[in-house]
Image (cartoon, rainbow, N blue to C red; front, top):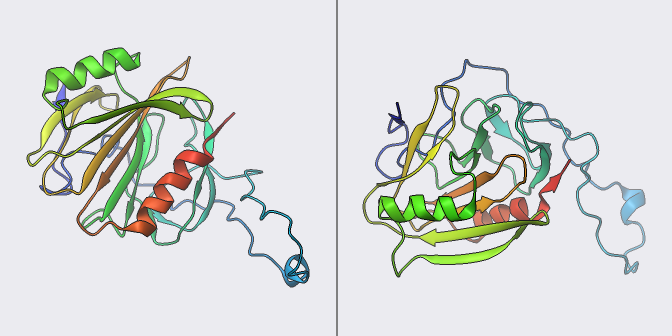
Length: 229
């Protein structure tokens, strides 16, 4: 039996929190990318490219709370496992991360400007996911569908707006299958289905009216930095 998710964040962000039913856990303590030292910057004429944040030893997301800028790992038990970058401070892990995904928000879960998450869909292929979105009524001529890659794997992106919240797709959670829904007074929703050969996953982005260039930068950096185990 499918369960409809609670409207945890109100009408603006409808039912994105698909993994919110675990017990409270301690705030995560990832290895944050170190600030450059004087020795690293004492040659300003050096034309070498700026090194990307290291993924070495990145700690997995393991609880709710503040997420400082740095490199992170997916929660323990999530398959596929990968590292990713959060390139700004002020983000929050708003539900206990688990084997079914995680959700980040800025500034917080109660009045977010942006939600960025990873969830495990019931659909096993991009075509099946597309069919599910079509059946839900989300896909029409206004939706921008783009095939691409994420971390070297084939992906399909869906960018859309909807004035009302609509049921979107079925996702897995600790409480069984749940219906997700998206829409309302939002600047944009984006779903990216990543065709991992073992377990596909969906990157979910919901942008509120307060979202701007800085939030888009973090989202794009997150997607571009994904490196699979």
